[in-house]
Amino acid sequence: MKEVDCMKVFAGDQEELARSVQVHKDLPALPTEKDITRLANNCQALQQEYGFIMSFLTEEERNFPIAYSILVFKDAHQVTQLLQAIYRPQNVYCIHVDQKADQSYRDTMAAIADCFHNVFLASRSVDVQWGTFTVLEPELICMKDLWPFKKWKYFINLTGQEFPLRTNFELVRILTAYNGANGVDGTVESAYANRWASAAPPPHGIVPTMGSVHIAVNRDFVDYVLHSPVAQDFLNWTQLVAIPDETFFSTLNHNPQLGIRGSYKGPRERDHVFKPYLTRFKNWGACPFDYPCAGGLRVRQVCILSTGDLPLLDKRPEMFANKFYQDYSRVALECLHERLYNHTRDEFLGMMGFDTSYYSNLAFIQNTVTAEEATQILDTQSTFKSAVSAPN
Image (cartoon, rainbow, N blue to C red; front, side, top):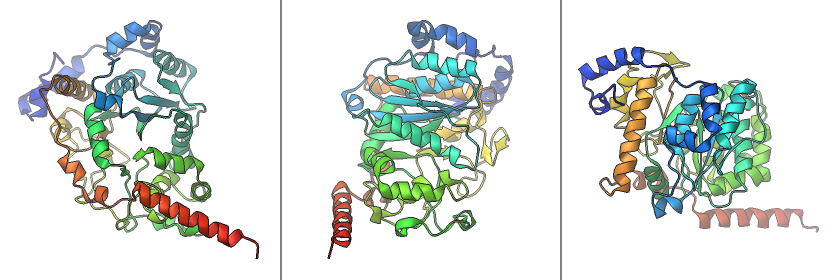
C-alpha cells in the first residue's frame, strides 16, 4: 500500500500507526457493486484488477485442495478481496448470499462466481438470523453443494468479514500437520447449559458441548454430517435448543464414541495451551482473548479490527482473523493483503519457509480418533445394531 508503510505498521511504529488514521480518511471511494459487476463482465479484467492467482504455485498445494463456504450479505469489494486472498484453482468455493441481500448484490456475486470454474453460489439461500438454526443452515447447504467435488481434503467456513493470516501454502502445511485432526472449538464447563434446558436429552447418549460454528474439518467429518443417521437425529435435536450453530459441530467433534475421524478424544474442555482454537482469531475482550481493541469498536463483544491491531495479528498462529468492516478496517485490510502477497511471493521463490512444529506438536492433534479407530467404532456399532435387530 503506497500511502502507508505497512511493514512499519506491523512492527508497531507509533508514528506510522498515527499517520495511517489520517491516510484512511483521505483514501478514494471503494469500488461499488456496479463497478465490480462491470469488471466481471470481462473476467480477465476482474482477475487482473484484484490480482487473482490463476495457476498452481506448488505441487504440495495442488495435491491438497481445500473446500470453502463463504457466507456474505454486503460489501462486494471486501468479499472480492477475501476471495482473491484465498483463491487457488485447485480449491472449491461455495458462496451463500443471504436471502436479505438485494438482487443487485446477488447479481454481483453471481457475476464474480461466473468468472471461475470452481466458485459457485449456494443452491439455496437462507434468511440468516442470529441465534437461530438459520446461522447453521447455510453451512450445511454449502457442505452438501461441495460434497460432489471429490478431491478436497479439508472444509473451512468463512464469512465475508474475515481475512486470512496464513497463505494458502501455509494453510496446506498446517492442515497437513493436523494429520486428519479437526480444528473445532468446544467446552462443557463454560457452556450455557440453559440453552439446552428446553429440549429432551440428546439422542444416542451424545454429550452436548458449546463452541464456535467456524471450523476446519476433514472430509470424513463432512461425510458424517451429511450422511449419518446419528448426525441427522442430533441435528433435529439442535433445532430445539438456543443458538444451535454453537452446539452442532462442536458436539460432534467432542463425542469420540461416534467414530468420526479426527474428532477429539481428550477432556471436553477448552485449553488454550494444549487445545487452542486455531481456526479463527477473535478478540472477545475476555480471558484469554482480553486484548485491547485498538480502535475501540466492539460489536457483540467482538473487536472490529483496525490498523492498530496489526502488530498483534502479525504474531498470531491462527488461520483467519475476524472481524473487519470494509469502511472501518480499510487500511488494515490493505496491509494484510500486502503481507499475504509478500509471503506468497517469498514462499514461491524459496526465500521463506514455514515451520509447522508448533502445530504438529499440539496435544489435540496427538489425541484424535484415527481413521482406523473410526472404522473400528463404526463396525462395532453396526454389528451391535444387527444383533439387536436380528429375529430370535
